[in-house]
Length: 471
Image 1: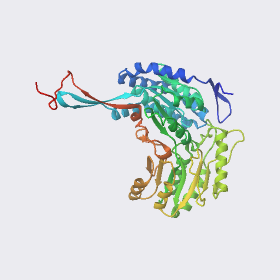
Image 2: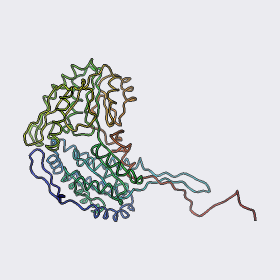
Image 3: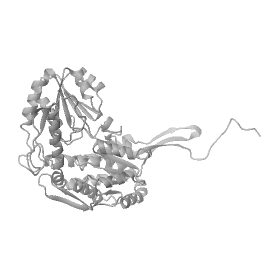
């Protein structure tokens, strides 16, 4: 029997947080289509002013917004506050990106005319959001899309609909028409319907590779529909010679366990050269033992909260047991810390001896360790994946990093920095199963508008000198 409502629960407590009826896809898209001409015809300066007002609305509601994010995702309050700040900061970054990436050009042409390049919006954009950053990541699509002149239908994850609804409410409070940006409450069926809808001109997706591949297939016979996919990764962090082992361990822990490992850029594989293996693994093991896992509002504040729900926690437990039973050696076991809530202790497991390591995104605080003889072998192992989002090298020399950068397959390549925490002032995206070469963040402007070339002259003027009879 089809469901008629979406209900979300607080992961840390199990209490119901939000309940709303499932939206009507056709009706929502129709309203967005009707609103498009008016919004697109506004001066871009006006659209920029409207999203600046949105930033002010988020700023005014920052405490309530952060509390809601913490409650619905289970992440610590300190981290929820950083997400709200990212939502606010995205506006000015997106305005700068639009001006830089989609600027107008005019050139002289024949007969005293001009050639021009301008950009147009696509039309109705469907934004499909994830649960790990339920405000920041969809907002990174919505704001650039609105600046460019598109209207937006945003379907938040069915696991975090309350945050999605509050995000859109802030747009409406800023004076942006309710049909220009809409929230569509729904589950996978509504997402599929949006993807297939003939009146949707673009799909901006953040989520799993499995879902992204399904979207790509669905749109394969419609090349006119813009598609931007951000699908996570099986990200490597490679450690080579360095005297700063404790700093390396902190970088590794931040990479693997921030947001309870539920970041698309989180490190999944710790690849260590054999000369650094013992002390690096021991330092990471010790540090993991100090990580506080608790509910979002606990005092002292935890480093990690819950994973999103008990189903996710169960899947992580099954994945750990699979690795363990197929050649993995536990360094720190993955443990459920509560019978009722999805609190999971961060885990470390050596999978060097496994003949076939699964090339999947284990979306949680589960880090695999792989010993290699040297940096070259580490690069080969790091590239042993179908994904290609983020990679980091810790230690080594500038020449080592140049070699690493030149040979690693990833859209984000860092040195002595975590794999996560990418700057919104840079492009954000990957290759392989991580994306379709449509990077987000600063480069989101590229997929929110398309370039139009024009040849222009004030009055009709023409001459033909070849191929006509002379009177």
